[in-house]
Length: 249
View 1: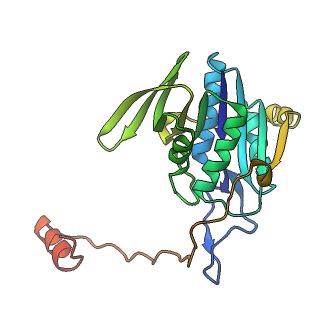
View 2: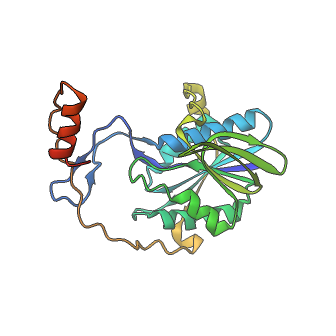
């Protein structure tokens, strides 16, 4: 059984991002980049399934600039078998990402597609759902537990009311939530071995996908600074402030 795992290169979650002076975008020059944390969880889950004998091959794919190869090498060091890099310097909206991943999935024919529920840069939370729709495949989003069988995968997913368990026929798309697992620490020998694993490079044109953006970004601005909090002496005073000052009730 083959698993396809999509990983994205994003600004490291420990970095405090700043907006460019002209307000056109976020300034990512000379900042630390790393694998999207939710994608890292998806990668860890694929490796665990392989270690359990449920999966025989893990193919990792990333879309974007040349530096995405570093992210792919990290995924290979975690336990991926081979990697595919669709290289482009253009900005990719979630729909364009889903269309490119569909082409890769049609080429690779994986039984399970794993990716993070969202990326921490745009927080779009759309790619997995769009990919499942394009492939006409079952989807299990916000997965907190994954059990892979011979012909189906059982996913425990986090919903507003608690937990929901769904059984999906394979092939299926599963997006990882925060509580699915805790990714392992990558050891130096694995990093060195990952350099020898195959990494295929593709151009967008080879896949025949239109990645032209459908949305136009007008402006990016930092949130307004929060004012200091105040202490109240009683519930009545709290209610009065919420009603008369904050005007939220």
